[in-house]
Length: 119
Image 1 (cartoon, helix red, strand yellow):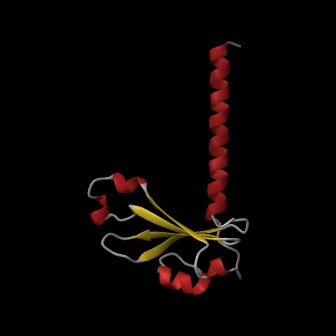
Image 2 (cartoon, rainbow, N blue to C red; image 1 turned 60 degrees about the vertical axis):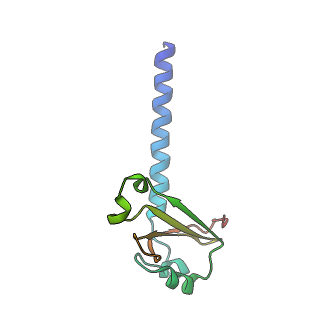
Image 3 (cartoon, one colour; image 1 turned 90 degrees about the vertical axis):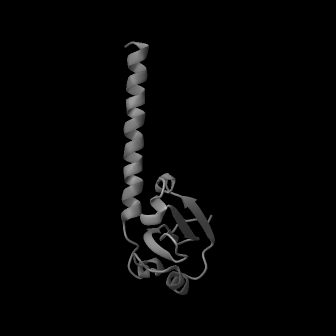
């Protein structure tokens, strides 16, 4: 087997492994929190104030731009230029989106992870 072919096969295997790993992580992220947990009470579209009433203050927070935030004028109409994660130790994450010209955060996703370290 030539060196070029060997490198191609190794790169293809690495690519397949990366896709399988990413798919497994996405599948775990898309599964809803188990009934009876505090995260199961959080629903899409819920405002941050209501989440704070149910879960309390997060262990840590993270705010970051999305790829859409770099599209000129997108923020005026589309929203989703920035997201905020509220991370809860031993529970998981609640991900919020903020509409343009508004200070209100709305839930877009909930990730249940009892192994979350909170940071």
